[in-house]
Length: 263
Image (cartoon, rainbow, N blue to C red; front, side, top):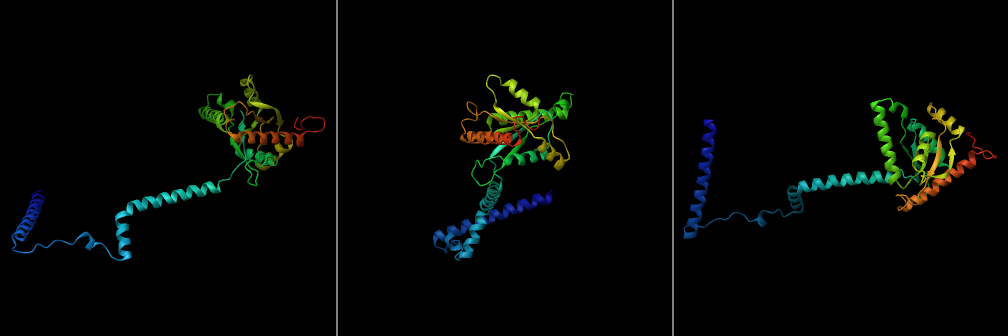
């Protein structure tokens, strides 16, 4: 402690001596006893060559430069992701009280894409599937995980039907379909024409995934006019595309007497 105090005292005295010497030097210069030598000016010490100027600039602005470079990299990555992100023409919303795996839905999605229109006119037909399915029976047995899964799926589904203009095609089991019809008696949510998933697709899903789909799955498309998504012009185009999918699907998978091949 004593050594530290002594060091501080010595530094203070040294600083005072330097200030006093500088003051006396200035006084002598003012009285004409000697010339006062000024230090070099800013202009004199500034670098003169291009590389010198560049190094000086980088030294004084390195923090802003690093920030700009980081932001540029992040912007480039985000842009690349947007460019490479697969675009889709319409959304298929799966809402079922029996859980359906994403792998199973992928097979259904690929089958329905053959009936889809190129809504965004990019030369490709793509359907994006949103999985809002869950096991309702497990949720009703006070299973915490199942209850959370049901809450998450239902919340996601409600958000989609309220605000997603491209979500016009739906895949539902009979219970989920009946619930939607019952809750929307005065203002029907779905248009009248529906289709039942064919035995052919059921078989293909089982062969490709090893698991069977829930029985009686229904393909339907939603109304747009008078709904919250009607203000977005893309919603009408997507509804037309969904209607075509259901109509063309029925035409392919319906026998001549009008009965669905899956009945």
